[in-house]
Image (cartoon, rainbow, N blue to C red; front, side):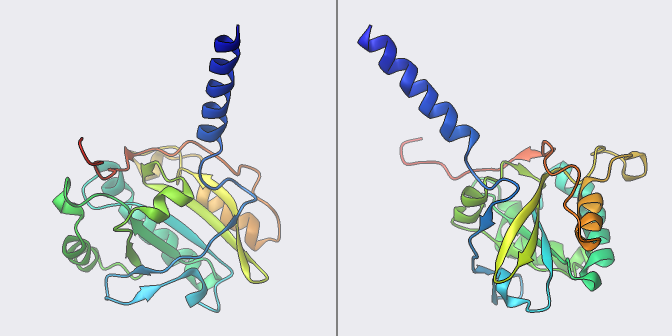
Length: 204
């Protein structure tokens, strides 16, 4: 009986930990410093005029990330001037996926003419802290006093193949609501994309 109760308690604890890992809407995020493609370190506090950010965990090689690149660029072009710029972060292990190395990030950003930061999460600590599971995986955060609060987590829209066919534009709706002084009606969706490529642990 004790073993059954212990097993149940362990399973409950495991489920609770899994379900509550990473940031959720309403959470205050911890700032970070990551290296941008220009070689300089950037944090959320770096941009004093930002009202918030569209933080996108993405990468070079994932076909979903590639399919969403132009939409990510469009989001930055539309909302950066309104106080919600894009910050892209590549969390993938470049040992397993050389296309996601820092030099390849620089090359990709140049080829696609990124005008937003593309940061290298080499240690994967930020992806772990935020709870990013996919590329792309989006977090819309709003600046409140000296902190940044999560207002939306999930997918960019509801069509990973064709932007024109997407009839639910979750990130746009979230940012538009925030600009209007409201909270997003939809603050969480399931991210669509490749799984983050985590570093192999010793012995794997």
